[in-house]
Image (cartoon, rainbow over all chains, first blue to last red):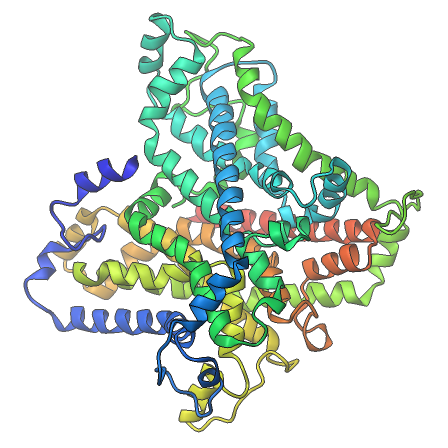
Length: 298
Length: 319
């Protein structure tokens, strides 16, 4: 949704596509510019090295992975590790669980936080200021401090080892209300007043006026919620004991028996586990950087 | 505008809304029930999964509640007294603080360097740089720890392999009491620097170019422009990043747990406070005692946040 409009709007001038080109520098290479490029590329290579190492290891036959001295390139590259990991099926199940949980968390967060932010920004009701102050105070509560009583509660509710039990506590992210409210506050009242005069109720105003003007911030909140839910470890780890319900971080982290000390398989599973978000980032890179700006996180 | 600085100001400032949000009491938005319906779904979740566990945890900390038995009884301050005399609590708190001291400076400095380099580098490599610096942040923690455990392997890991080429003898990174926390810190810097980098990059892109052009016309050199324009304009961002980073580092658990296979490392050299809460609650099954330690952790987070907010707001007043 965001992609189309944002990319077409920004892309024409800069084919390579970074957010901040310096057109004047492009024509001649200054010594300072070259030094910066070399340093930047060196740091990039250092940062990519673990990933390259993981990918190369995943392409080795198992005996080659533990050879001494350490070799970077596989002597006989093979996809055997990937075939084995996929055939075992566990990882595919975890990926599926991660998709279900992350989509659930993101959808619920967007719906509940958008509605609450709209109420705080555009309506008046008894206790509005107090409730908002309470939610803001909730930002300070670290979820890690709640795992023990939360597990107790989930046992009582019978939600341990269910998708809902994993997802629901992650929806409580009051900071998203704060971010959305600030964005809604900036929408001029004239728009909604015009709609209200035409007889639109709050739901119509939210859906037809406010939301269409808030696409960038919705994308930002959605992307960040999704990434957080996808990578969350502690709570899903506490809330699931059944390997069939585990998300990728929990499954890969705890089910050692799955791959044992077979390093090529471990690395193949790692590459597959990391791939979805990295592909998403490559597609939405510009929106992610823009989103940080829009969310006012600067 | 910094997120957290505002966060803390908002409750106090709530009675006097800023000009950007006129009081909704007038015009179309009369006091009505509609708003209540709109906040209801989130309020229910907030009450059920934040407020309730917070209260239940506080109550449990005064009881001998355990996962091993049904009923529990009130024990007063027994858990709290035990906690203040428990060396494992202080040891794990120390590990947590040490980790925060290890990780915060590099996570801020390297992120800034990366953002400056990306901002100054030519358009052509910008995409590659953003990808390389940020990609690790997108990886699930278990993937990160699998890769790094493999790299830290004493015999055939990449790190000791690299050290061997320059003649440094191998280090048993994750099984040596003296290096295990450092090894986890290095992994954490690699893994999470991308988030701070992104915040700095967004801030740099928000600095209008004419500021630099005006300074250049006045004869300011590159270094002068950096120290007199870029750094001062990034102060708020830096304050935000330091705060977020310290709080994030204090919450250490995932990578420490996974890289020590849940053991806390040799002599518990890598067991953070959350690790001890986890052990007490889910291995020792002592919910009451684990709740008391959770509250100690909560207090540390609040104290660090408040101290920092005061420190930074004082600096900004002076500036």
